[in-house]
Amino acid sequence: MESQQMKGKTVVVTGSNSGIGKETAKELARRGARVVMVVRSAERSTDAMQEIIEQSGNQDIHMLIADLSVMGEVRSVAHEFISKFDRLDILVNNAGAVFGERKLTSEGYERTTALNYLAPFLLTHELLDLLIQSSPARIVNVSSGAQSLGRIDIENINYEKDYGTMKAYGTSKLMLTMHTNWLARKLQGTGVTANAAHPGFVNTNFGEKNTGLGMRILLKISRPFQKSPEEGAETPIYVAASSEVKGLSGEFFADRERKDLPDEVKNEELQERLWRTTEELLGTNYDEKLSRLKAATP
Ligand SMILES: NC(=O)c1ccc[n+]([C@@H]2O[C@H](COP(=O)([O-])OP(=O)(O)OC[C@H]3O[C@@H](n4cnc5c(N)ncnc54)[C@H](OP(=O)(O)O)[C@@H]3O)[C@@H](O)[C@H]2O)c1
Image (cartoon, rainbow, N blue to C red; front, top):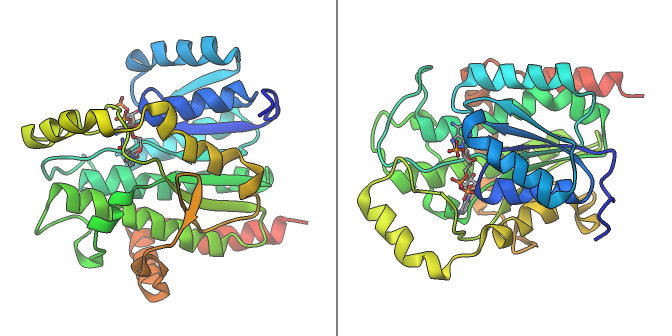
């Protein structure tokens, strides 16, 4: 790929101080894009930012700070982005984590649901105006094959009952893929696409914090069989930037290929119920926003 082919594009990558997000940010920077890293700790991200600048040869790298499990911070970082940058060509919702125990955030949301599902839902909503103004634009939601372990239970997305580590993680990714498919339909005609990407099983910091000993041992034993972070970033980068993906929307990609969507994800009645519940929780209104934006588009 030509190194400067993304010059003039502005990209946001959440959780880009480590793992898959850092490699995604680095490669998009190498191709010439302006990259805005959304991370939760400046202190822990300065080295990563320096590494991205040095290895990509691109100085146009920026950092914004937010704990994305807190919806108030998702809103503020979106507003900060809008106040500083005038376009958004690619939004990579990559930040995510798995948690050994059920805990609520300061706003009362179960933290897996908050970080892996509600945050990308809300960040995308807040940045939608800029994405549409910058179209053709792409939304890439880093989901997971672990969505096969999930089951959508709309009355229990906060896990008042039956919390399980992988159940909550898998369900958060299933909801994210479902949201992506729903959003893709809503975005038809705007020039903005939305796709989900599974990076594979990747050797990163994933699962190292906030999990029990059993999971950490399991991850350690399986390290030799895992992809490197560079390999793990290949599919998100492909979905974000490849001309082969141009115009495709609502899809789930793994190993740089389109895969079948789980039946649950395609269930439009369930999609609608999940969508309404999430909008009520977050106080968003995608339909209103989209009809205003579509009406304003020449
Ligand atoms: N590794 C895998 O095998 C695998 C497989 C399928 C899908 N995924 C998905 O890939 C994505 C990237 O994960 P990774 O494997 O690269 O793991 P990672 O190295 O742990 O990276 C996760 C990133 O998310 C950030 N993050 C976590 N909690 C956050 C919060 N509250 N606010 C803002 N940022 C937060 C982390 O920041 P800190 O450094 O501050 O924690 C880090 O930058 C995740 O969505 C994960 O679910 C990973």
